[in-house]
Image (cartoon, rainbow, N blue to C red; front, side):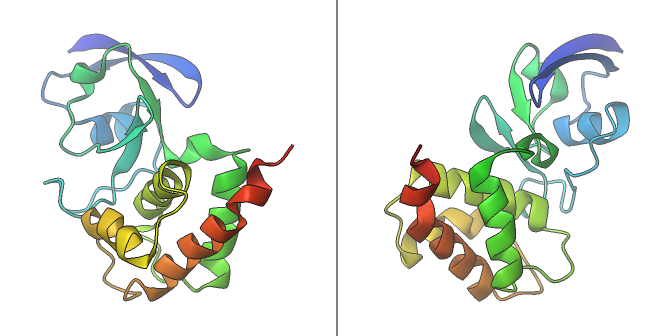
Length: 159
């Protein structure tokens, strides 16, 4: 095991990791950040999605050691984020969650969509969500929740 230093949710964290440890396992097992879920562990389902240097990545197929010195933002790291607060409210209002297992990864991806693609239409939202699987909702509520926040986005950004 070797020490690795990551900037996680605004804090510098140093912990031991084996070279083969995934970022998802490192976050969950070494750092206690259990909001990052693992599903397929092959990068297909998106439940493990986190931001790495501001971009969404599948943490189950990203080696923790390869992230040395980089910034990681997990679903726990969005406390106080106005866009994420609105997404959480919209997910609830639009019945975009059922079992909740995919929700952390969906929210991280949805945050990326809202902040990076403010003009996204339904087709683009669905395309961007293609890497996040949900077996419960049928995606309609998730898409509506993102559309709701996109429609409100100018208000979110005003001073």
